[in-house]
Length: 181
Image 1 (cartoon, rainbow, N blue to C red):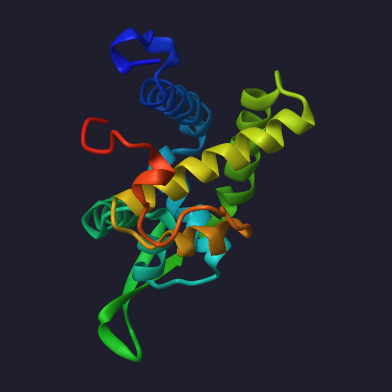
Image 2: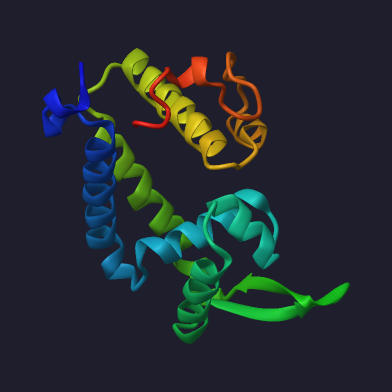
């Protein structure tokens, strides 16, 4: 099927953007009572999952621009959720710590986000859920490679191999029309 024949509801970019927007809006509604925004929750999650308080590790975990994460951290600092200090080993590196206020709301925020994920996937069987997650991971793998980011890092994060495409996506992996896509 050619792109000009595709309905909007069949376009992967549109579907991903719509799903992302809806999830973000619903998460924002759920987190509002805790006084945090989805971007702040993501930073808290990155700190929790990486176990690292270094700003550069948060940037890497979220796969966002350094300036975006720095702005979110500045708002979190203003709101009393984090404290940033120079790292002892290198003063140019920022060490981020959650405040007691952030630690108090963390488990409830995580619970609300988990409930939303469950709600979003509730119409899928367990096999469909697993396939859905793996397929999204595979698409991200491909897009990271096209974007010049090492896709192997994504494989490591996902804990699985996405076979078929080397470090940079070969035309045979994404089709002959790479320039026209």
